[in-house]
Length: 521
Image: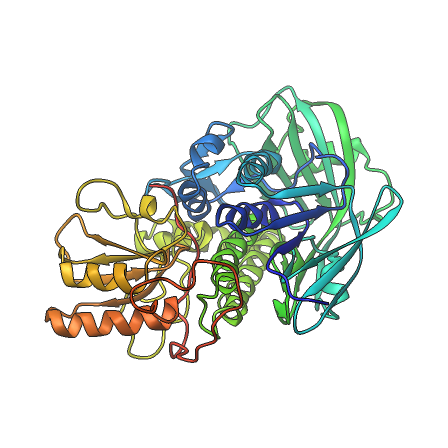
């Protein structure tokens, strides 16, 4: 195989579509291969959390998605207590309830407008790679074709063909078998936009599509049939009555199916030129609604790193940092959602009473409730920082106002690093503009602050300092820019704006303070 500079994404779900849009917007040739010939009007995910809305906002599509759903400022937990989301920082102190197909529609439109290609009805049948490129073989309309790429990203779900092709295991277990799904009409729908409950031997979930149809999910410990067995509407009604006290007037049914809920995670998210993201890398309980959101954040983390590599701007450690940053997040989500599921399914009245009392106390204790909301929403997720790093390193950058108007997330829209300086220092601006043109945007903060911060294209803080002496601050900034943005341009002219192989640098930043992309301001 010969070298190339494009990317092939396998799977046109939310993660694959967001990544395709990011790559295409940066000028990277990008093709998405999707096994399904048509866009299905079926969905499992409904919750779009605050950090994901920020990520979509920086891409200019959050407002469009907000029009499709319902904003929920608190979530009911077992026992009747509520987890308040209204204290979350940022412009999205809520969870948006909208069907997954709406998220996919918005992201597909963006990706196509940016120039990505989406080939539907393309079933991947093989993948190989060497030191120069990767090749994906796929079957479409009865013919086998191939696509060569610099990198391949598998976003093709829990049964990922890409993951299998690179020989990665998917260790874990099935935690719920024979989960029933149905799209139904409800004569007496619940007042809650998102309704979930468990009785120990049964689990129920109800969410609206927004067009009069509802997705109902049910599980019955006493009847765990094979996935091939048809769903019994009467059993679903019984589960709703047992868990929620009413069958909600379930009427017309347009679709039913069964599935298994697994907890699994690939041991590595990268093998050579092949990466995994979303359900191809990790699957877990749907409780908490964190699955799709975690996959979208995987894509946001990986996209700018692939762009830097293909432009020749990436330090040698950058692509490996994708696994190092996102694997622990996937593990934490797997454990957290699993704990929530097991809490819902506790057997015995005493155990459930203890659970309800504990959750009630937690949601009524502001610091604990804020921490729970921050973790579920993704707002508090951060990346590892090296010992001795500034306290802000690795954290989500808030959408601060900038001098002269506008916000940080607006400055991140073009995919560059943003250096937010405490004062309008011409020397620092000259340093960034002259030696890292096209890679770093230098802007003064809009309010009083001691900190100067370097914000990654995904909206996380790569480096920060409170140094007040101009000469010392400039030296620290130069070191941080070389570490994160690659070598300075020769003679003040950027040599990395075109395509090409990364100019490998060492200079690994002790540990990584990496991140995702933020939101449109």
